[in-house]
Amino acid sequence: MAETVQFDLVSPERLLASVEAREVLIPGAEGDMTALPDHAPLITTLRPGIVRVSGADGDTEYVVTGGFAEINGQSISVLAERALPRADVTKEDFQSMVDEATERLNRVKEQNADEHGLIDDATKLLHDMVAVGHHIGMSPN
Amino acid sequence: MPNLKDLKNRIASVKSTRKITKAMQMVAAAKLRRAQEAAEMSRPYTERFNAVMAKLAASVGDAENAPRLLRGTGDDKVHLLVVMTAERGLCGGFNANIAKLAKAEAANLLAQGKTVKIITVGKKGRDAMKRDYGQYFVDHVDMTEVKRVGYADAQTVAANVLNRFDAGEFDVAKMFYSQFQNVVTQIPTIQQIVPVDTGDAEDVDTGTFYDFEPDENAILAELLPRAVATQIFSALLENGASEQGARMSAMDNATRNAGEMIDKLTIEYNRSRQAVITNELIEIISGAEAL
Image (cartoon, rainbow over all chains, first blue to last red; front, side, top):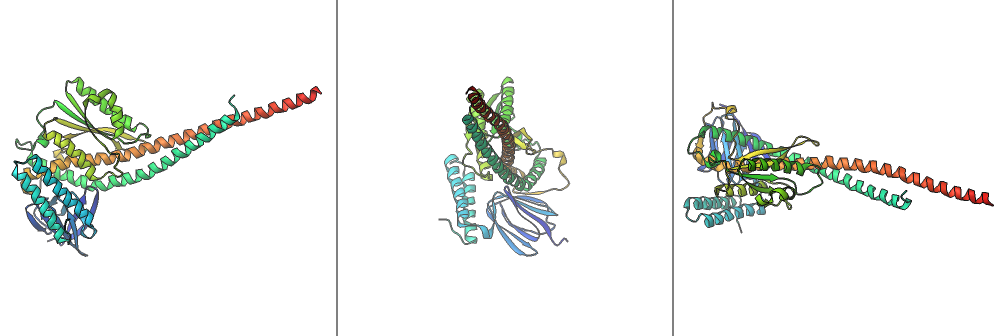
């Protein structure tokens, strides 16, 4: 079995990481998962959360706000909507992410008041975002 | 013959024009480098994104239940043209070329009896299209405040387009922008954005069977709006690089022309000066001879 797997984390604006990883923790839409080398091919959407990469030089964590991940035997690619190394997340960044989610929830409530599915989705998005904040020691104002 | 003072003033004014165009050229060169870097950085995402999209689209196929964004409305009546240009002029034929292409397409569609709606991104394209196609404008996205094009800007444009699609305002959307080839060549391009074009399914490696979480259609429904945003984003970046490239070569030409003009004016100035001196000498000599 292969020891490591090629891991890429990209956001639309740049390539954040491209390393050999032993395992990657991915915040999938239906629950967290840890992808190891030779994982079965899988495409999943992401919820806001933390991507943790365990590579040769320890663990690195990134905050992502959603997107999707493609996993196959040879490589793991996370295509995030917005991604930041955990250490670089500032109070303002986090606040803007929460604001965005809040705004989206309000908009959905206004426009599709009768579609509970959509409202639930937006509510969950906001909760996930706040949960990320707790995890990295920040709380929205 | 113009008098010496006028000539001197003209030379001074052309010289200051040359200084300005030179400065603009250098600013454009610096901005071009940044714009190219930004386009370069977005490439890994776009490539992977398209690869995944192609896989997904291949596995969903032309199924009846495929999302509308992929399948289209099944109609071809109302066309939405998204015309993306710069906010500023002084960049050669850049804005005009995009507008020309968009006008040709609009005229073509109208001739076929289709309905045309136009969204403009960037002030210059709006101005260029206004006279002939002003009545088809449905919206305008202002980019004056945007210093560096970010993904969020692309999302704004995409959201605008998608909301209209959901509201059933159009069947097909195309965008117009300029592809950056090099500093002297930018190619005005038409690209279809809705229904989403996933490229040739033939290049897709169908050997791997993917699991999908949640299911294919749910992922596809989430990815398609992003595909639109991603396409718009890379078009905006291309456009940014093209604009700076076009401006750079336009300003380079202007600087050179100003230089030539200064040379010509200087020769004329020297000749006039010589003529004045000769005149004065003749006057003195004929005065002395008369005595």
